[in-house]
Image (tube, rainbow, N blue to C red; front, side, top):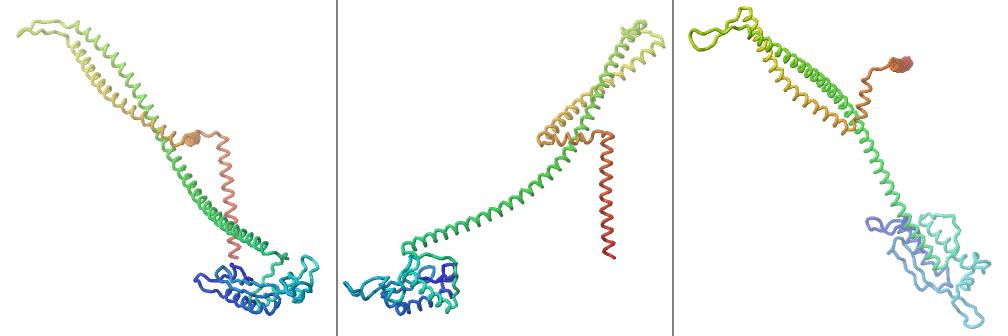
Length: 361
């Protein structure tokens, strides 16, 4: 016999002390055991033990059914059915209406009354149960234990799933933050791409300027060469007008030229010296510009590699498209969109003013 279950009538609490529910159950079981023999005179009670060593207080009762009045053979025999009939229970009329079922219902009703006296509420499950033999009862209880174990497993799985849900929600939050961070990084990369585009354009402009300088220098160099040839021809021509004369003071030779020819020769000499000086300066500057151009070309290549490595190609192309001159149709569409935006903002401001005016009224 047992009152309650381990979930509502445990023997001890967390401190190892006897619970109040267990004390009430013990009183009920003790009263039931004390009055058992009186209620059941034909059930000879030879052992009765109250156990508190498991989850719930329970009572073990061992008895021998004794029947009398047999006409043949032994007058007193061991028979549960005959013993219950002697105790006043009617003979069986069906499998579900017999002496044993009636006796169990009476004992259960008596136990229920004892529980109520101790303030223990009886739970009516609303389930009509069949009478079970002891092996059947044990099998049912084993199945109940299996189901309880499964319920515990399901509870643990539920907790694990809830934890996984929380983990997934946390991961989703983290991923959302990462997405926002990536969007910010993309904005920064777009800004960098715009800066790189500007630098590339500046470098390309400088490269064109330098190329123009090179072409200009090459042109001047060819002009200088032509002029130099002309000067050399003129000097050669002037040499023909010089008249050699004997020196009075040594063996060194002298020439005699006219004053106009001399002035012409000196002018040509000054021009040749000036042009040679300019040519040397041009050559020096040309070497510097060649080195500078090489550096600029190298920087342009590195910037292009950086744009490709960072995956900014599409963004860079879009940016270049945005810099392209817009058609009249595109300008009209942008003006129309801007006008619609301003009208929406104006309506919102008017609604806000109306709400504020209504509030103050």
